[in-house]
Length: 311
Image 1 (cartoon, rainbow, N blue to C red):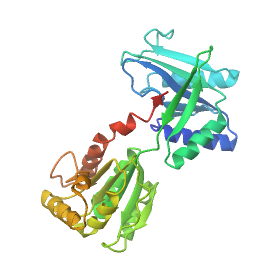
Image 2 (image 1 turned 90 degrees about the vertical axis):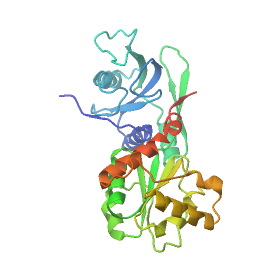
Image 3 (image 1 turned 90 degrees about the horizontal axis):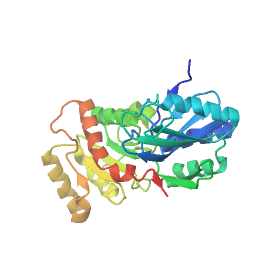
Image 4 (image 1 turned 45 degrees about the vertical axis):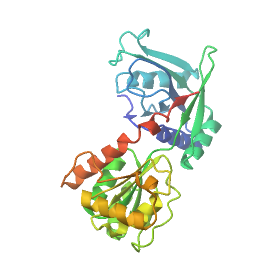
């Protein structure tokens, strides 16, 4: 039986696993998509790796060629030879079709640059962009791809919607940060929190949010809206890609009025979205969470499309 494939989405997660394997002294092959023609399930520069045990982390298609990539990577580890694979239109693998109708080329490197991977992992952990360069076999020139940190979702709130949103966003692959006045809520979502966690003590004071960057979204998920103004004032000073709040249209009007009284400019107020959610007037916490995350995703494409950029 073939070893499992972990369908990890984010390049930062594949790079993190590669860094762990390097520190453990475990051999692996790094796979990078270097050319895409036509449709594709994944973006240019997508990453995967295959460990010496055969386990594959990450993927380059939606399952149609990943088993073959896994096999080819194991062979490359055995021979120590870098390989350039070609799937789809014009490929020698006639039995392996890409349903999207395009073609994909990927490099399997059984001896990737460990120092470059560690440097990339360090940069991404510090929420800075990172580059990895792939040298193609057969004398082809190098290709450099730029990766950004994982998108983080910072949630401020309490109660059922707060908990449901943390769980759903974690399942969707976000880095999660949490702020709440309720210790039980923070404890309940602790398994999903991978970024900052902060216990709020007063509605009048918000903690510093200098960790929120352009690869972040900030949501307030309170039904008692007294906690929001100070938090939103602080969040609006950041470079967050999306800032939004839960509640009715009346709550949004009051929220805007209070922020104006705090001296927040009209330009900054245009960045605040609310009531959040792609579907209005939901009453189910889990569906509210999905609806809110969906709206966040609509503001992410400019970040995602920058995530793998060929130089």
